[in-house]
Amino acid sequence: MGVIVLGLMLLSLTIWLGLLCFWGQFWRTDQQLEIGETQLQSLPMVCAVVPARNEAELLPTSLRSLLLQDYPGSLKVFLVDDRSTDGTANFAEGVAHTLGKPEQLHIISGVSLPPGWSGKLWAVEQGINSASLFAPDYFLLTDADIEHDPGNLRRLVAKAVQEDLDLVSVMVRLRCESFWEKLLIPAFVFFFQKLYPFRWVNNPNNPTAAAAGGSILISREALERIGGIQVIRQALIDDCALADAVKQIGRQSNSSFSPASPGRIWLGLSTLTQSLRPYNSLATIWDMVARSAYTQLNYSPLLLLGTLVGMPLIYLVPPMCVILGAVWSNWAIALTGLLGWFLMTFAYYPTIRFYKCSPWLALSLPAIAFLYTLMTLDSALRYWQGRGGAWKGRVYPNPDNF
Picture 1 (tube, helix red, strand yellow):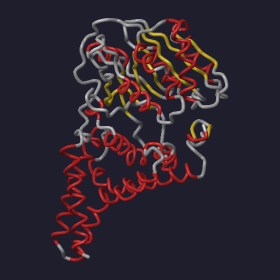
Picture 2 (picture 1 turned 90 degrees about the horizontal axis):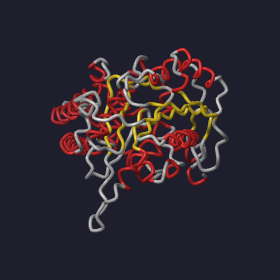
Picture 3 (picture 1 turned 45 degrees about the vertical axis):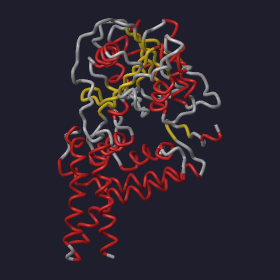
Picture 4 (picture 1 turned 180 degrees about the horizontal axis):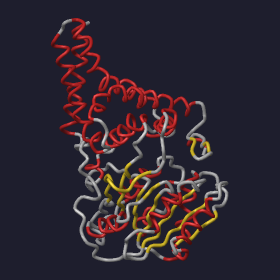
């Protein structure tokens, strides 16, 4: 038994060494929008599109932050009232009038959801169609629960223009105040970065593509090139689907002898722009993850099986070996397990520090990973039961039934 346990631990240790050394330095938090800011070289026109479904409570903060951007160019905001029942449109008008900027805000009353569309993307499509009448250079796709730092749009535009990017996105700072948020939210960001290492995303020669839906700046040219939002109309993980379309379709070459080049995208973290959405309980975070975790695995039973085997091997084997090694007085197993636990703690600590949580929480990654594994399993169970993804009062069927 000791030989088997030691073998599993050596395998886990090898995986961690590989992740730390060869997996795009995913564990680092150095890809940040606020790092290396430079001055604007031009002032392209931007239209922000905000899908809003029953967001009256958050709009006084989120919409206000968008209307008060310090961007010196032209910014128009298109808020799509997605059939809200809480007076979302009235609250939005009130915010704009209070700030003396009613002409900057355009409110669109959303129409019924047609077959084959997810609710959010249908709202975004309506907003883009209205905004396109102004022929903007860029669209800012954002959510109604995001509080933008005053300089967020200015930094996004500067990044896009100076580096000739088709799409710039930041994973906004998620709320991390309650016990469950501090325990599980930094890990959500950590696992996302492991799935999509930001350095790989930002490398045009690497096929990895991802974005964060809370704050996406995309050029009108790139959006038209991929065929518009309708090409991803069924996507439940719409931000990553959009980034993948932009990067994979790429740019047409001016020469008939040269192949098209990949689309240029950039994804990073933000220390200043933040989400207002609270996750005060285990249930709310569980539902957030379970809504799309199996989608992330492409609804593949094989990938699910790999996850259910791989997550315990990577995250649970090291602490179990520490315990078993101590009980058996087998110090080879205990010390090897301790080394593996140290490596995962070392990898997780930058994210914990970024979210200003207690350093001791970095040691809890094995328990957190166990909870996320159960959430992933529950996501698959929901899919097999035909419940699909539920969000904002809508339950989406399995993609096969769209």
